[in-house]
Length: 74
Image 1: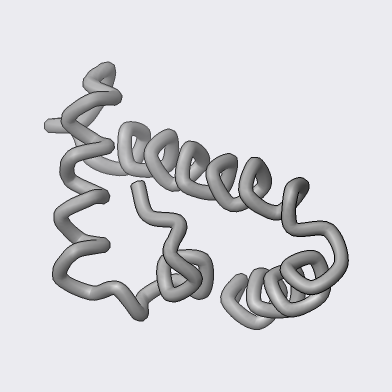
Image 2: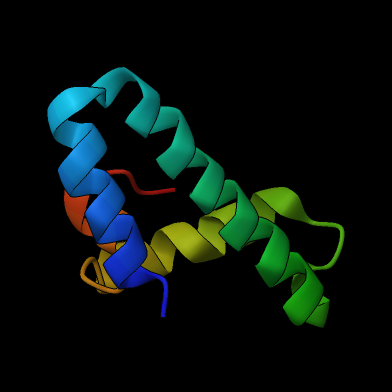
């Protein structure tokens, strides 16, 4: 659902304003970590474990999100 929007941001800001693109994509990763801590009981109040869990998913499926394909992984 969000991949086309993020891909558009990467295409536009990656060409014109790359310095503002990286903080935005890192923010998306932080939001994914926050979502995982709310979604899964075993990750609740364990941000580091959620980050490692998301990092493992990014390693196994690097094409899952557009910003992971761009190279900004957790």
